[in-house]
Amino acid sequence: MKKDVQNIQLACFSLGDRRFAVDIMRIKEIIPSQKLTGLPRDSDLLEGVINLRGAVIPVMDMRHRFDMPKADECIQGRLLIVSLQRQMLALAVDEVLEVINVPAGELRPAPDTTYGNGMEYVLGICFSREQMFMILDIDSLLQTSPVRQESFRG
Image (cartoon, rainbow, N blue to C red; front, side, top):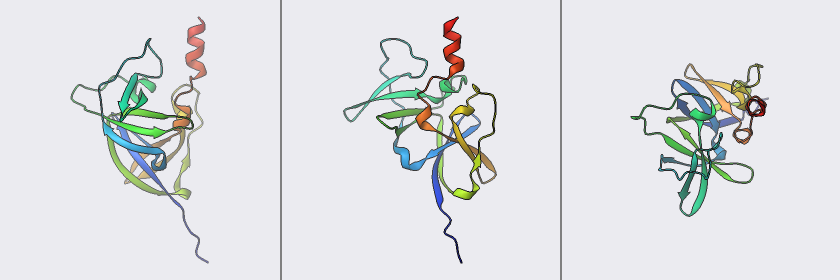
């Protein structure tokens, strides 16, 4: 009896030398970086908003979200427009790499590590062409981590 192996399509992107992936079904489109309109006050999570064909979409700089240094000026970057439960969100990334098909059985769980190092946003890990990709839980990206909240209590 032959079993049907379900493949999951993942869009892969980079932040520096780190590789990430998100479910392709959650991506509405990929566009070049755009000039942002700032928010009324600074936000730990959002860099600003863009106007995409009349829709105002918040933008999250993924480097900032993972406490990475800003990208070099020469990196143009891309925006992944993703669908969350109640809204759209643009994820600012360095480069979109490829779309990969991964058999569901080959997905690995994220390592159980200390909360606050970014792994709380990782659903699992997969491999493609000898590269490892961290699969992001995009629904959790807008949540403030307890580590950050405690730092504001002083």
